[in-house]
Image (cartoon, rainbow, N blue to C red; front, top):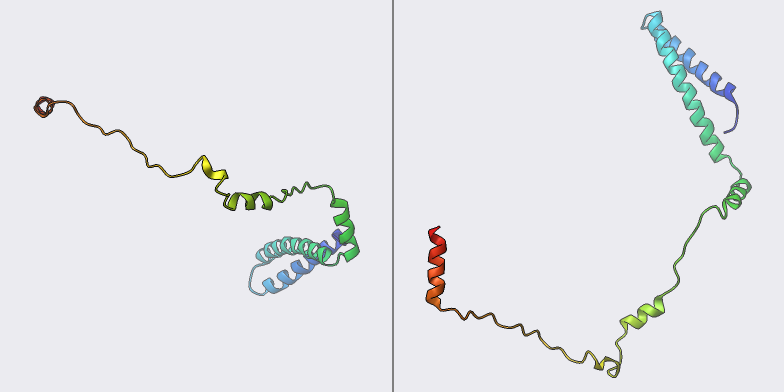
Length: 132
């Protein structure tokens, strides 16, 4: 930030005086004084903001490059290796001689679940369970 605290104090004092003079016509002196003090604080903080913006905008290009040069090596940039050849190999179809082990499609044939019980015994078991 460029400048010093005197700039902020002058900026705050200007805000205080302006607010005090404008407020005196419509308010009591104490109300005007309190509002003037509040405006002093606000204008003082606005001066800090103004000085910061001015410092950022007015930095010469050479200083920005020097600052960037000082930061070089402070961060760790990671790049992944180029794997496009491996990806292309995975996506291209393989010749028929290589695919012999997984040749054709065979559907799954699960065993059929067949009950060997007599249907009357099953009905008797269901009746017994439904009575409870």
